[in-house]
Image (cartoon, rainbow, N blue to C red; front, top):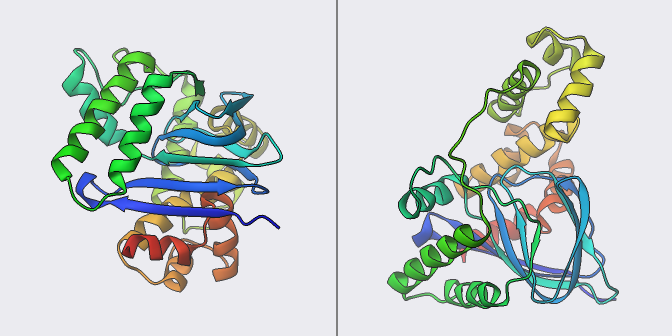
Length: 274
């Protein structure tokens, strides 16, 4: 039986930037989100994943892009599985680069394409990944990191320099979405959430799934996992993190964490300490 492998590296010199090095065969990621962007390169095999309302396939050499907080999945598109490396910069990291490199840029960029065929940029990303795995060369790491992100944004990103007024329904749903991120440990009922925005439970459920892409209970799990990663980075104990984030027990926490991250909380903590 082929073994799944996933290793996280945290680059402290770059604000704790996460680098994932993984090889999956049977792993199937259900719908989930990350607070950071996913910028990766398929190095062997091919990956199939859902993003922007449709299914995409990324073969060897292609770049995969997922925006922050964007609903997506992941599985193998071929029998041999897929091997890839990816970084997960936060919106704040990309917003800073975007403002420095591009005029009239406000906030973090948006990448409309899920899969990109750009061999030169893919090679540059692989060189960056190699460099990030090294212990020294901080100045070179930072230079390569910023120049690679700038190249990616210039070729394939869209600048968020215009803002339109949000529909009233979306504004209401956004308030609830943000509340769940702020208080993920709270066990809200569907009626509690609906009452906050003055909607019936059924109408709220439909509107939430329409605008967020997940039903409230599934988004709450993502919010809990987001808080859990933050607490683990602070050095909190796994059992305490599970309790503080609202999971019923540690096994429940472990199951959801591995489903979204590809590693257990224990493996994730080990990567933080390396």
